[in-house]
Image (cartoon, rainbow, N blue to C red; front, side):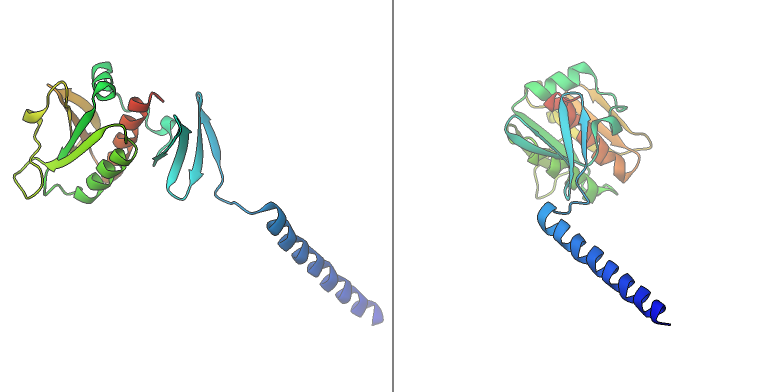
Length: 186
């Protein structure tokens, strides 16, 4: 009977040592369950609370998807070069598009990641916001037109970049693909 009591005491002491040493391990070495780093070419991406982060050109950029998750979306060389060379990008959509909230997030996120460019927002119909249509696109100021569609693609019509998405998730993929092109990652 005495042997059973000693075994119980030793188990309690053993568990206490494990728990105390775990606490000290976290205090001295930290705990970061979200820390994941992935390399893509010359770029390093770190998982953060905001998504994927990339530091380059003395700036931090944030993305929802990694480059390898969006590189299947094709962007022509002419669209890519036009977006790289311009100082202003106009972004538009239908005022009553079924994915207005996701389009707004994608447009805002794009602007936050392009501080070296002036980004202007608007709608294709006359509202209290800026009226921006594909007809307004020029070589110097291209228009990115986010719109819901039955396909996901990035195509150019005149100077207008048509960012078509078949679902709400593809708008963020398109946004990240365009950003990766402008930044030279893909």
